[in-house]
Amino acid sequence: MYLDLVFFDSVQELQPLAKKLGQDFIIAKTFRNDFELKQLKEKISSTAFKTCHVLHSPNMQELLKFRQKADFIAVYGKNLGRNKFAVSNERVDFLLMPCSSARKPEFDAALARLAAENKVCIGLLFEEFANAGSEGLQALLRNYLLVARLCRKFKIQIAVFSGAKNAFGTRQEKDFASFLCLLGYSREQALKQVRGLERFLEKKGKLEGFEILEGEKE
Image 1 (tube, rainbow, N blue to C red):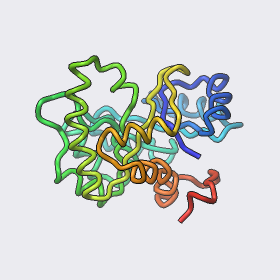
Image 2: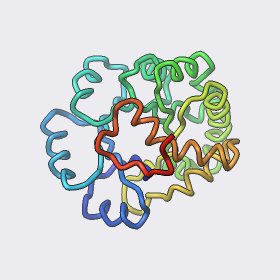
Image 3: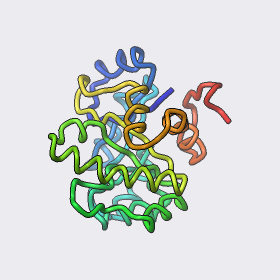
């Protein structure tokens, strides 16, 4: 079962979507304090949904504060400093959107090597590509073709998430695989990445009690 990362927390909308799409959700947010995270955990306690704290700066104190409290830690990239911070730390689970539409990509072979060593998953947000506009989309695709090539070379787990801010922005597993094909993955490689995400997170000790389908186990 695929885990999609979203930026809204309406359980009433997410529960039927999980059933319809055959996937569960990681609810991502930059939590202001422990209480806010605790409230969300109580809200989703009857579901298989997970929580993810998103950092927007290379703040080790913030990372350590939420590391044992949120299910996952993500760093929002698009900046060389944030990217380096994320891939240098095995406590980080996801580096989201490492590149912007800048002419010079903010992700290179040195950072890719660190991501592989520290087992940091590169996360792409479908929503950002969908809302980029024609010129911005071309620039993003150019940069992410490079990111995808580096991920293949260094055997880095890459994941496409909807990054949805509402129910209308959610996507199916097949959409994520198709997007990876657009970035140069073969159909077989794309499906392997999509279906390998849970296994990757399980190896990091992050999916205790989460259902992994028999056909997706090694």
